[in-house]
Length: 88
Image (cartoon, rainbow, N blue to C red; front, side, top):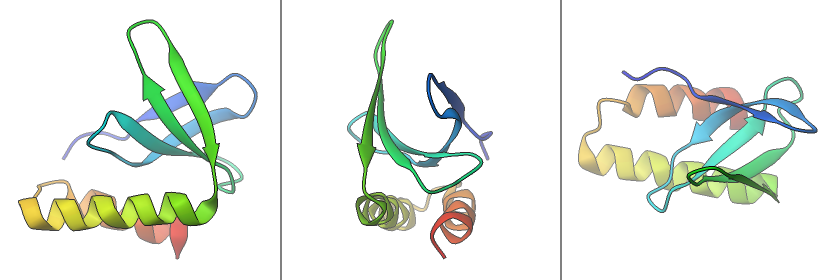
């Protein structure tokens, strides 16, 4: 199982990865408040943050879980745990 991923947002501080994506844009949440969600795209020398609504973040996370189940991913338990901690 891979380790957790964190980013530092210039305004909102530490973010943790909630869900990965196939298009290179992952979902992160604020570490302390866990109320703000960001779609994050990391390019060579730039990081782009886009605020997204709670329901969009939850939907993307559910799609990530479905993809992990279909592929029999070794990280399925990690993503299920993150989903429960963040959205339930």
